[in-house]
Image: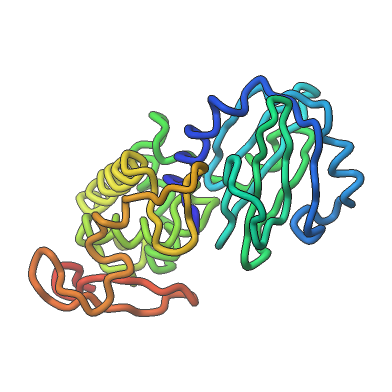
Length: 269
């Protein structure tokens, strides 16, 4: 699933190719992706509009348009955005034709991605907590957001209203770095543990962005290349493998219907 590092990589790599271009044609191959708009409404809302800038908010990619509206893309579990892929592309859901002759294609094998045209960014902002890589997000802010939450810390990290952009695999990696068991109640973390977790979140996300995201499933960069962040994973998607710190087999458990990987020796409950 594309998380913050993957969407940020997509934003950075698409930005030089999209900014300043206009939509000249939009082909909707699957209306479920753009619901509740019809294909005609979606096309009318985009054709002729120039892309002013690209932003990322949490796991959302936001294209700001010349009419002050924005095209919001949430790739969810398996969405992929490819720039000028070879034709034909199986499972293409939306094809955006741009004024320089290029094509941006949204591919999604599970049909879970969502593409919307919004009047502004407020609807996205209202759903999300702070950006973890912004200077305003500090260890004290993390502690404030955890102190009244009795849910397992892993579930709290996945709550996008608490922190924006962290998903399953990077939560596992951050908790391992911080030596915190994923089932620990969030409010039970000491100040020292919260500081370690804050540092682990920042370093995990920055490293993943540096390595262009993790291609553990369907994620590809806009040019079709894979990311390399998963080669540095210590526990995420490593069930049964020896922990790189102590050699104990990495275990998997389900927390609120999400698979979680951890080392039972390094991350004691």
